[in-house]
Amino acid sequence: MIYTALGDSITFGENASSFAKAYPRVAASLVNASGSHKVIGYVLARPGWNTYDLLDAAVWQGSSVISRSDVVSVWIGGVDLANSALSSLSSKQPLNSKQILSRYRQNFHALLTQIRNSSPARIICCTQYNPFPNSLLSTEAIAALNQATKEVALGYNAKVAPVHKWFEGKQDRLIYGYHKGKIEDALNGFLPIHPNDRGHHVIAKGLVSYLGAGQ
Image (cartoon, rainbow, N blue to C red; front, side, top):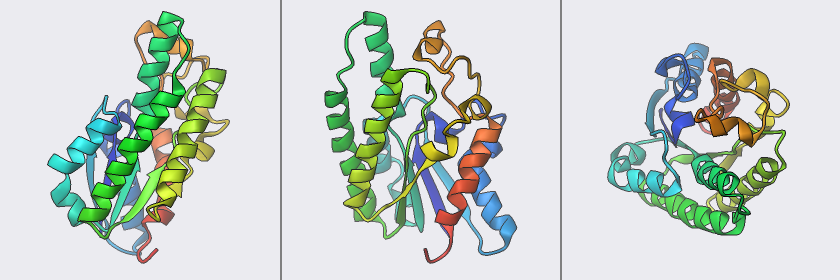
């Protein structure tokens, strides 16, 4: 079975101790270790990619592997929110979440359409955990993002992996460089938003059931 993970820096494995510790590779390893079936994993992800960047990559770089995939996971949208939230915080202007979500929905629709048109793969859409649970702005924005993800996924008969639930209340143990859980923590130039090795393992373990043959 071929499993392809699409995403941004989280899927890429930023702040994991090695690429082997990033959740797509750990998930494939867990399935292979179980002996239920053989999984070959591929990753199409880069730090800084937003939904448009991933869509562009899926069309021009990933079409070949996506077309051969049995399962494709999609985890995107955090960069769209993070860039806008930090800009809003720095400029002291309100976050235009309506515009951000409208653009996200449009690109996410196009991305899932691209996958559906090129592959019979089962699609798994991952929700976004909240790296700043002590900031109301972050909590509201990520809840809206996850709702949009679920609604778009429904239209493509895609599964939704509730990663946000797997991290809820455990962010301080699962996120690399976690500080106070506030957006202001990111203003010093370092973004404490990526999973540590433990966080990647939690994600991988949660995804294993979605990678089951014939599901």
